[in-house]
Amino acid sequence: MSLATKIGSLTLRNPMILASGVLGTSYSTLKRAYEAGLGAVVTKSIGINPSSGNTNPSIFALNEIRSVISSIGLANPGFQVFREDLEKLLESSVPTIVSIFGESMEEFKEVLNGLTDLPIQAFELNFSCSSSKKDRAQISTDPDLVFEIVKELRTNTTVPLWVKLTPNVSNIVEIASSAVRGGCDALVAVDTLKAMVIDIQTKQPILGNKRGGLSGAALKPVGIRSVYDLYEHFDEEIPIIGVGGIYRGEDIIEYLLAGATAVEIGTSLGVAYPENMVRFFQMKVKKYMEEHKFSSISEITGGAHK
Amino acid sequence: MTKQTLANDKPLMCKIVDKWEECFETFSFKLQLPVKVQGAKPGQFIMLWIPGEDEYPVGIAGLENNILEVGIARMGEGTEAMHRKEVGDFVGIRGFYGKPFTPPEDVNHLLIGGGFGVVPLKMLIETLMKSEKKQDIHVFEGARTKNRLMYLKWLQELHDQGEITFHVCTDDGSFGYQGFPTVALEEFLQKTKTPSVIYAAGPERMMKFIFDLGKKYPKVIDMQMSLAGRYMRCGFGACANCAVDPTGWRICVDGPIFNTEKLEKISDFGVYERLDTGEKKKL
Image (tube, rainbow over all chains, first blue to last red; front, side, top):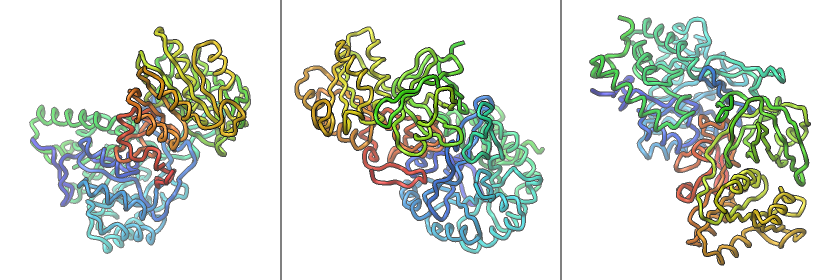
C-alpha cells in the first residue's frame, strides 16, 4: 500500500498538503509542518510589498461549528524578504508551493518573476482572498481575468501553476475552465466562504475588517460539492486538490472520492499540534485503504462518481 | 455548570466591574465572566477585544469567582482604548490560552518581572502561596521610578506578613535600592544553598539577560520565562505569526512559558521579534 500521489508531474509522499495561511509565515513553521509528516506545504500568500493586513481581531474560532472566521487581509513580509525564508526552507528539501497574490497582472508577474528561479514545486495563485480590504474577489469571480492572468503567467515560468478557486461564485466550473484554458496545472478547491460574525452586546461586527472568510468544518460540504462538480466536468484532464474543513482522516477520503488527487489542510493543523493531527490522519487513511482494499491513492480518486 | 476552562470561541463579552489606577499609566480591571469557569492557570493569557478598536494578548493577574483581573500598561492606541473603558462597559475575551508556569516543589521560587510582565507573576504568587508546602517565594521587581512599580502596596504587605521576600529597586533610586532587579537576584543566587527556579516575564532582552545570568549558577535548576509579549493574531496556533525560529514553536500554543531546555533552542529569544507583516526585526 502506498500513500504517494501525483499532481501532474509532481509526486508527493502522501496526499496531505499544508493549506495556505496556516503555519505559513516562516521557514521554521513550514519545516515543522512538513516534518510532522505532510506531503508538501503551501506558504502564506505573498505579495510585492510588506503589509500589516487588517486590524485585529483578524481571526477567531467559532466553537459550535468547529470553524474559524478570519480576515488577516493578506498580511505578509513581501516577496523579497520572504525569499530568505524560502531559501532556508528549500535547503531542507521541503516540497514547497508558494502562494502568491497581486492587485493586478503586473503585481502577479513581479512576485512570480522574483521567485521563479527557486526550486519550488508550484505557485498557487490566490485570486480570491475574500477577506481582503479591496475587492480582489473581482479576479476570482471574473472568468476572463482569470484566463488572462493565468495565460500571461504561464509564459513567465516553467514552474507548475495551481489556481485556488473561490466558492463564492454561482458556477465554479466556469471559472475553473478559464484557468485550465489559460494553462494551469492543477485546481485547488475551495478558498474560504464569505462570512461575518456580529456581537449582539455591542451591536457590531467583531472582525476588525467586519467581513471575513469562513474555514473549518462548516466549509467541508461546500468543498466536497465543488470538487465533485469539477471532477465531473474535467475527469482526469486536470488534477484537483480538495481543501476545506478537513478535521479527520475520513474527510480526506471523502475529498478523494469526490475527485481529488490530494488535499490541503489548514485550520485543523493550526488549532492543534500538527504532529498529532497528521499521525491521526495517516492512520485513518491507511485503515480505510486496508478495509476497502485500495493499494494506492489514485484508486480512490473519483470513486464517488461510479 | 462550572466549566474547566473556556471554549476556544469568538470573544466572550464581559462587563467591567472594577477599574483602578495601578501605577503610572497602568490600570487594573476586573471583568465579570458571564459563565462559571473553574480557572485559568498562572502564565496563561487572554486575547482582549476592545470593540471597534483592537485586540491583543493580555496576561492574567487573577481569576476568582468568575471575576478575571487584568493589568494594562499604556503601550499604544490599543491599550489607550482599554484605559478609556469604564465600569459597566463591555469588552471581549478569548482564552485562556497557552501553557502555564509549572512550579516544582521544595525549591526557592524566584520571580522577576519588568513592566507589564509583573501581571502574570501576580497570579503565580497567589498560586504558590496557596500551596500546602512551605514555599520560599522571592519577588524581584524593578522600574524606572517608584510610581511605575506595579502591585507595590500588595507586594509590600505580603513581605511584611512574611509570605514573600520582596526585593525592590528603581533606576532613579526613588524607592528601594538604586539599580536593576538583576543585582539583587545575583546577590541572592550567590548566597543561597537551596535549588532555585527562576520565573520571569517582561521585555525579552531583560529576560535574556536573566537567562544568561541564571545559567551561571548550578543552583538554578530551571528557568521558566514568558514570551507572551510577542505580536499575536489568533492566540490558538493557526496564524503562527508569533512563532520563533528555528524550532517553529508558536508562542501562543507551545508557550508562552518556556523552560530552560526549550529557551536554549530558541535562537530568536531576546534577539528578534516578528512584526505584524511577518518580517523579523532586531530587538
